[in-house]
Length: 156
Length: 156
DNA sequence: CGCAGTTGGATGACATATCAACCACCGGTT
DNA sequence: AACCGGTGGTTGATATGTCATCCAACTGCG
Image 1 (tube, rainbow over the protein chains, first blue to last red):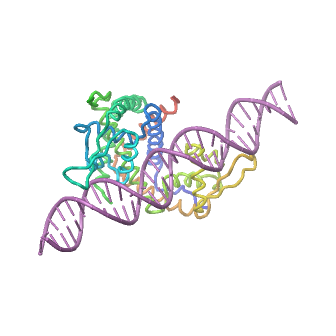
Image 2: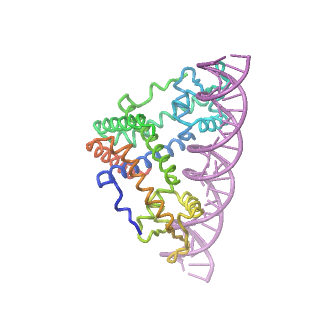
Image 3: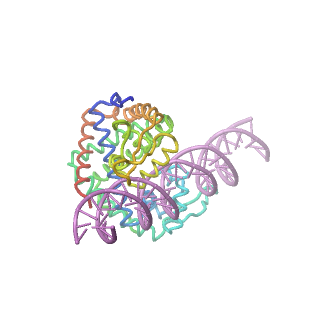
């Protein structure tokens, strides 16, 4: 009956990972549930609408959108299909490249995202930002950027 | 055409949230893919096996397990069903409470989790821990615990 | 031109998460 | 004993994410 006591993380590392991991789960869950309850949007819906709403004319080629949200092709395709069904976005053919498709946010989509964005910011503030000191907030940003840079550098 | 420029997060807050959020996604994705490739386990499988493997005799009542991983009842039930099908755990009736059920990790499950745990720790180290200074690592733990405490305090 | 490799996107199968019932059992009350 | 609110767990419907595969159109090059 092997135990996991010889796990190759020491106490300090273990504490950091454990607490980070749990925070991530709880925080994401809380924000997701609140978003869904307030606006009926999933996290994925929110991401798509947020990016589209910030694009000129609320239009983006699927490829650009995919690049922004860093999703796989199939995920975006399925997601847009569902959102199209709910009237949040539309899909058109692309002029320059006839393989491509162009996603446009609808008026309804814009309505939802504006309020969702607001509520979302409130949640982020309430659960994360307001709990931390300015120093901690900056430390978190530094940490995140460092880790991200490391991840992007190493494409293994 | 309302823009999102009046979003109620200032530049400092926005940077922290944005970078944290992106790190979370990339880091989780990387670890998940590596775990899956190396061992065939999903994150959910890993969590369940990790908790079970640390329990005395590799046995836990479903209720306890659920409490450890903080899942909904239905999620655990479905998950255990699948894992049972793959021979990673077994499900038995509970003696003390005939509503209850008892989950037991199998030998095969124990084999998988031991190596998975090792690989997982390597990934956590490579992508997170080794990128950060000791001060940053401690700061991350402090931040996470603070945020977690706030989340648990407020059950809205 | 004609071909090969690449890219943009869609599709189907499958694994997973979530939500809302549902059912059986527990415990305490009358 | 009959009841009742609460709990432990399951189930099915539905939404979602992932993977492998497919197809058509682009690109560059001989």
